[in-house]
Image (cartoon, rainbow, N blue to C red):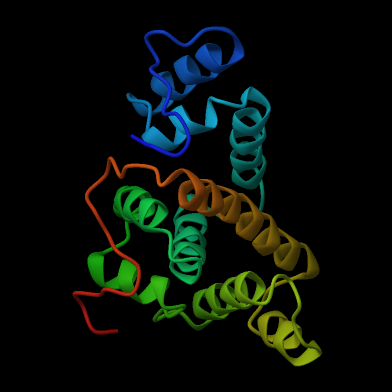
Length: 185
């Protein structure tokens, strides 16, 4: 749970947050603690869920979106999101080795690695990237639209990273800690 921002109880939550909780529960089969924290602000919860749906309708498949989430969560040192996206990433086909590589902006696929490194640059530098850094990701095969979708994924994941930092959300997935790797990349 969270001691800094209330982790709502889905059994007693009402209104829009309850409706959104029910939708998440139907989709995932449970309501993660992050969603229970987001429920304090139905507008923020709705924005987060909408960003996820919008990103899901873009050019990138679920596996690459998970890889981006891992790279951003590692850059932002968000244990909750690293834990959640490691679990979901495995469901999307990522191995433990790939997950840990992706957290470090690495991949055996040069295009994926370029996208992950660009996402980490955008995160680290708050969107300020050089002409050379932008050209590198484009040279790897990303279009202007793809670059913008990388930014969309950075923004969506940074929202969850920041909320988890502020709330100190209790991790309800197998625990993964930023900066700690069991596989050498």
